[in-house]
Image 1 (tube, rainbow, N blue to C red):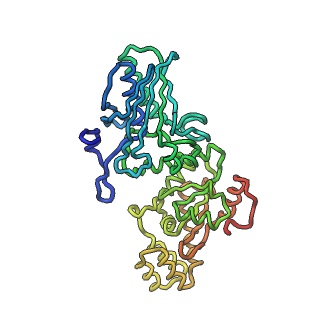
Image 2: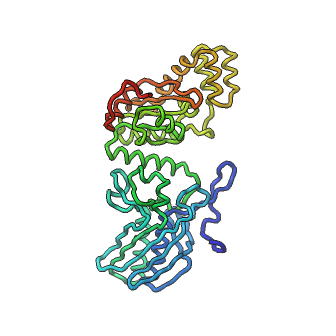
Image 3: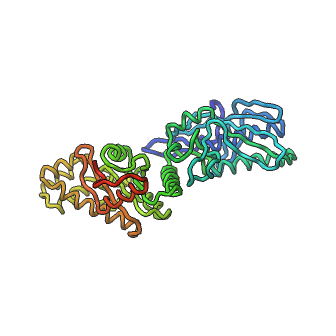
Length: 395
């Protein structure tokens, strides 16, 4: 949109001492395209840009692309701009085709490149287009105002499509969530705030709710890629149905408790869950980086020398600290101390109202230890997914 203000020029967030510019959602794109198409078909007004007020209260000025007109329809597009957020949908063109119809009211559906809901637990019912309620409401609001201005009392049918949506969706969580054939048209505020923690937590909630709505009572959770890789390679558990919680251990527990989940088995690299042994429930380094202190304290409880503990405090990585503990032949005892405290703080977060467990590993040293309840949780998870019983959850 060179040479034209979008309305977001003064909006940014600060991440790692850098200004990160805001963007706008696929929902805003769809609403802007529908508004332009509606004005053209009902008011005979053609425009290169359209104003759109977002639910966040920020007014956007969106460039309208690919205006096409038929006998009783108009199609327009708006290109998604995610700002500085690492969003896979950035740059996609979101189309809205608005057609006159005899039946009253405004009907909204998805076309090419917009996913279809195939599993329960998502915002829209099974069989519907993956267009969430806020974008739907934005489209309806804009078109209802245009109908009033034009004195039009007929109905409108809106088809939202994304030509490259199916290809883009293959690299997202949509297939795992039960959204097939394309991307979702999303947005609760109409605005993309770069690397929003709220958006990350919301994505965890959506995936968890989908699993619960489809019958899951027990969850298999890893913080990230290391945990997922270890789970896949070394554990006889339903890897394909696991989910990631990123740094949000506490929020994951809170949401699971609220949804009535009966138990969670965490599989984590020691670098993340060492912090949980100190009651730290957001494991991002900017919130707390007490790994060396936690390992040193638990190694002291296990009997390590004061000199060894001081050496641990000077380490940079958990594997380096584990090397010192192993050298002192106290790795098993230290991990017993760690896992006991991890389970204590996990249980404390949920008031003891859920069956919880954790398996710890290191990229260098492999399996380190596990809390109580792990084998019991493994049995529940296998039963939930129809996997034959085995003696242990580890290969």
